[in-house]
Amino acid sequence: MHNQPRYKPLAETDFFSDHRSARGQVDGTVPRGYLRIDEARYTGKIGGEEIDQFPFSITKADIERGESRFNIYCTPCHGRLGDGNGLVVLRGFRQPPSYYEDKLMRAPVGHFFDVMTNGFGAMASYASRVEPDDRWRIAAYIRALQLSESARLTDVPADQRQNLPAEAPPRGLGQGPEPVTPTPPSQTAPPPVTPERGGKQ
Image 1 (tube, rainbow, N blue to C red):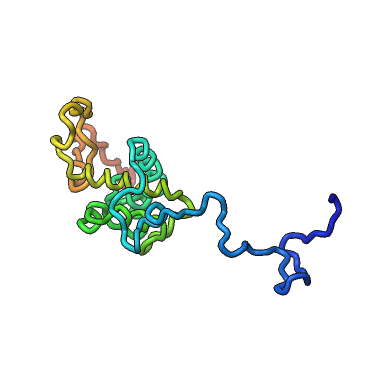
Image 2 (image 1 turned 90 degrees about the vertical axis):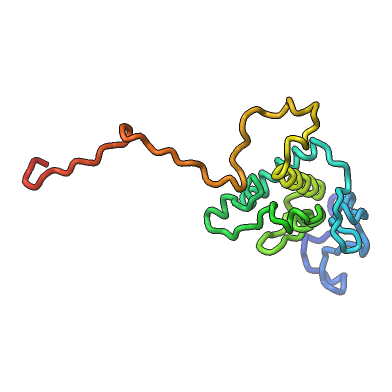
């Protein structure tokens, strides 16, 4: 068995009619773990229509995982707030839409999963980088961002309001630019002295 007839990878052969020693998979073969018969979970659709519910229960841990994946893969273009002002946009790349536009506020969660899976417009597919369940977690975090944009204190259960942070939230959407504080005259550097013509240099 140590020394037996064999082909080197991708070597030509006369044994098969197509002259390839490497054989393709048998039709209908599915690698272990890739059966994926749950259409909603792996496509974001049922019968071609985007679904508006998550295919598995979303927990706090899922939201936190979605936030971490969002910060890694999505913020360069979409920004941490999801307003479309990521760093690459500030450097001249095409700006993606804000998650707070009416169209995306009304979009089903399956839409976000589908866009991450197949790409849309200038956005490429992230299917090779983000596993399906993490795409759902990112979609859940996007939904949390959208809900937080119009959230009110009354949306928080009364017994949990004392757990809210006391400091003001970070400046975000629709609040305008940060105010500019003028420098007091006493802290302004004096203008450079230009030597008079004919004077000492």
